[in-house]
Image 1 (cartoon, rainbow, N blue to C red):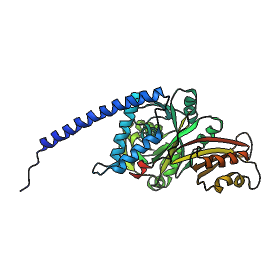
Image 2: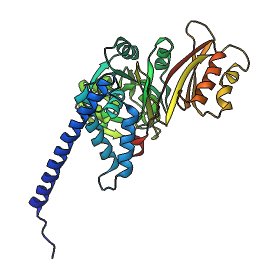
Image 3: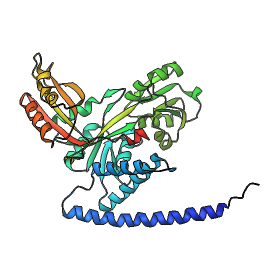
Image 4: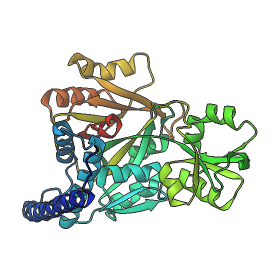
Length: 364
């Protein structure tokens, strides 16, 4: 005989647990306020990405289940965001509009208890941070399949802003339209990067469709919401924001699709023990110049995770190199090697040392 489950009793237990959680949240909030007052008196930063990353890693690592790790991450991201807002509601500019992947990256880093300000251009994000209109900015810098965002790298040549943190966001592209019927699709609209990342799927599935490149995935979703013959390639969040129906998920050709974003600000991040340093420099136009410059890094075994070249806009056939490397500039060995590197450059700039992204969103 099957034992009858007392649903009401189970719900009462859940209510009691929820009440306990609510009480603990407010107890945590009171402590957060005290922490904020201490930070304010000591002129310490409110947003400390390395501390938040450590919290996420500790909690997901200690989670015995059955509550999923991605749920732990999402819940505590918002708890931390809400607690931080009691100290100060942070303003963060991002490459908009809303419902883009940059907007998603912002929410995954700062939580929703943040004042997010959409900007129309990467230069506008840099400008808001430089003027002090916002606390931080978030801009895309590279995609694992589409390559670098050259405009972001170019902005660092003249800007004095620092990289304060990085964000890795797994990209899942969806095809969406008003009707939910793929036979209605005559035009596929999106930003150039998602179009490039899904061009094989488009050619195979919608070979007759006209491909329309727009300034953002959110704008593509907006266009699709007004035109029954247009489908957008965008995030699932964009479908929800613009009232569209998802026709297909994961339309990207390479399912291992990750975009890296940078958090930019005026301050330098503290050492966390698992850091990355980014520099920018120009080399003389002669044989072996690049090798000679980066040799001090090789001599002490520094791992270079990225090398990218960009043309110097004011001089034909001359290039600026962008390098990411493991380590923090406060480390004496790395600092000494970078000093030697600087002596061999005609132009040199440290863009920042900052905690590496934890890959938690990607892993769970």
